[in-house]
Image 1 (cartoon, one colour):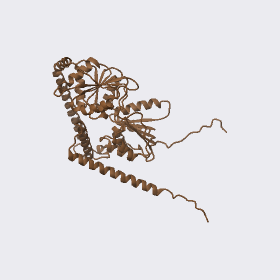
Image 2 (cartoon, one colour):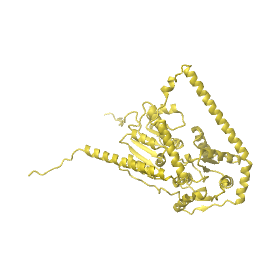
Image 3 (cartoon, one colour):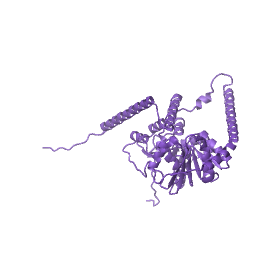
Image 4 (cartoon, helix red, strand yellow):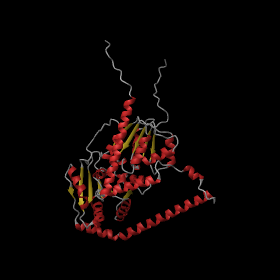
Length: 454
């Protein structure tokens, strides 16, 4: 017998073993980089499928069916619909990172479609810093005999985080920029993240800080993916001192050395607040969170104080300091407006150039025959929803977000309709689960019983 005999275990060729779903592109790139480092001395192949990066390169990688695929929901469905030979029918493990964010209204229908296309014998793992009712609904729908493992409480901040609030009195909302400028320029000058609500706000705050001499960069959805990754790199490499971001940077990102998180405006819910301030005071390090709050934020502040492990402090910025920075901001106001106007004109010119190029391509393809180009029809990418369904989903998500921002005050009629729809949905889920149990019970082989022979 050959003494060099080796035993090899074979697996089905060209099948995806593990699918990891993440809510944001930045988190997907981070998970991909960490996974590549862990698997660098193995033969495990890893694929990345997130929006904003080169589509054809991703298609080439996914056609080979790598062992692990890390993806965002929208781009994954795009590839499942339009990339030949790529499927997730035989996956063994499905991982949902930041599961509560994955079940936001923007992702609900996409998640249902992905779960429907996965193998029924898979193992599903959900990871989330906060366990919401939406996550519990998903658990009841797609998991069998789930096991819950809690590392920490769902609604607690880090024990070494110092929480501070700056009160913005009613009628003084215009002082918000001056307060932020005073906090950043005088106290929290480096390794600081500033969270805002909208993309437009993020860009405006970035320009204001830049005019005051602060090295800053921005991270939000209006940037291309290479620009977003470049902003993260600059902040990590300490080329800039401040990162101005929307909630796209509030989930899952592990950026070393963040000392301070400043909430330019309070988030709409306690869960959003926990995720924002969770960017600092990580891995045993200390950190500070400073939030600019008004009277409308009283409810969420009470919740934060109630759950705080350490005393929550009230930071007071002297009125003369606020007045000083108001004067500085007033001095650069005209420059700010001119910059925004120039950028608006550039965007309009870029849009006009793109429309012109598009018209030229269509004219060149048609060549006067009045028919749509065949190549465009051939290579058009399909989607599991119609355009009308996608618009309705986006509209519903916008309404829910606005309701959260305004304190959750929905109209009585709208609230009644939503409650009826939710009740009907839960009722249908119970019926489906009971039917599945009965079908499974009927398929079981009959039990053989031993009887005494008299």
